[in-house]
Image (cartoon, rainbow, N blue to C red):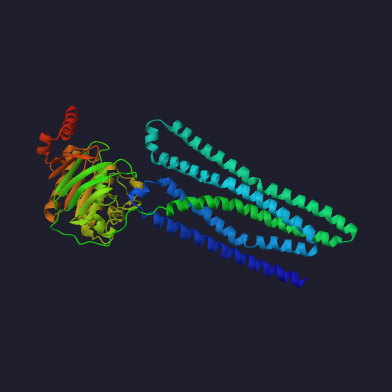
Length: 521
């Protein structure tokens, strides 16, 4: 009795140890996989990011990685144990009676076929489940981020219907695949119970004929029970592995995408060369698609202010994205200070360019934390100068905690104009050589916009800062040294305001329509 008790204690100790290391290994695997996936996503250029939706990447980083992590945990805990139990039971059955043991083998083969059929049936369906989960996540994100718009248009019921349809689709797909997976246990039990009946029937005959004893029949039934338990565990594992396989395929889809942009080895700026040169540059978003920008030729001298104007979809944001190498040109060459932009390291480009994007994005944290994104080593003087130039100093100083004021997620506790001014300040904190403002003053009133232009003009004269301003307002770029007019991906005019009013119909039409709108006000 003491030996059995000791074996039980040892079994418990080894089981707890195995559970501990299995949990540690699976959690380590999940952490490393999630970190590597996140790091890989961060190497993507805009072109690669366009291939996946934000919600899809989030689902792959969370739900899909969790499925893979769970499969690893189950593998370590059970997969290594179940085959030994099943094979051992079959071997012991063979030692008792070779003919009756064939029933074990036949049952195992039938179950293996059933498992293979169910696995092949459910694997693509589990991938559909994860895809539909992407849709539900996307709708949730859109509805929450656009809650004000939904309420402003009274579209709550419409959004509820759309979300309900997506949720129902996810539910129905999940039910279908779960129904198929649920067949595993009853089918496994049925096959093994039939095998037990066969053993009792043929074993009973052997006992009657004196070839086997009753104890041996009981042993065979016990071995069959051991196999039953092992195969049930294996069947449940198969469901987990099928889910994990679908998730792994989705994760690998991300890993299989490599960045089309290879980081340069480094280049030395030629201060005497133009700040920006674009020679016969064309760009298409889709591979082998129609060019979105066509044969762009542009030269920007150091210290110049360049305004870019055009209608919606004319290619303004794409043009400045090519300058700072957020995209690579499909054809042609982009040069920064005499060197091909592809030769610079990413760190060099981020030092050369300060970018205030079209959408003002701020992160949860203090005002100062957001400004230090551009330059972690920025001094208090750098921050103060950036705030003054961007016309942010007045409202930041008026905040109760000043630079230590906490910004909520997405900067929702700030107005649109305040967010835009802080993104401009963030771009200036790094003391860039070239500043790109991508329609980043659209929420500013005319007086503040004028003050911003004046401050940037002083900065250009003082430090030789090159500024590239994308704007919907002709008044915002009217006094730039050079104005570039885009229409349907082509440059249709380059010059000063006075020159373009005389020579460029598109520019003239934009100015006329905006001036007329102001007069009507």
